[in-house]
Image 1 (cartoon, rainbow, N blue to C red):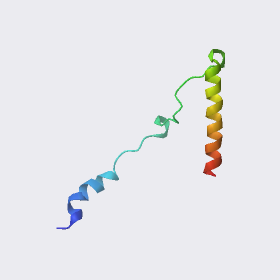
Image 2 (cartoon, one colour):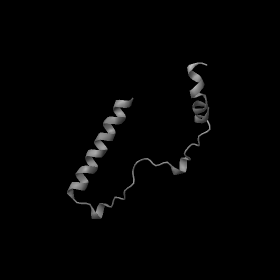
Image 3 (cartoon, rainbow, N blue to C red):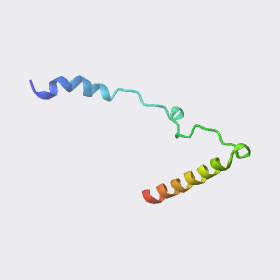
Image 4 (cartoon, helix red, strand yellow):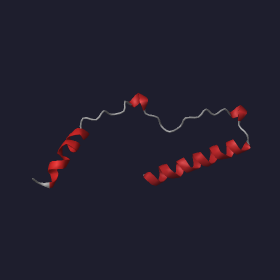
Length: 61
């Protein structure tokens, strides 16, 4: 009896686990932004976020 004998059923079960449907996945953005209600701190945070996204995209390429 080898080492893999105890792990056999666990490994076989992994392939049959369900996947999350695309319509249930989120992109991580879960807030509503309204420019009319935003204060200066919100606008600065938005600018910093966009700058960070740009740096991340540039770094990935």
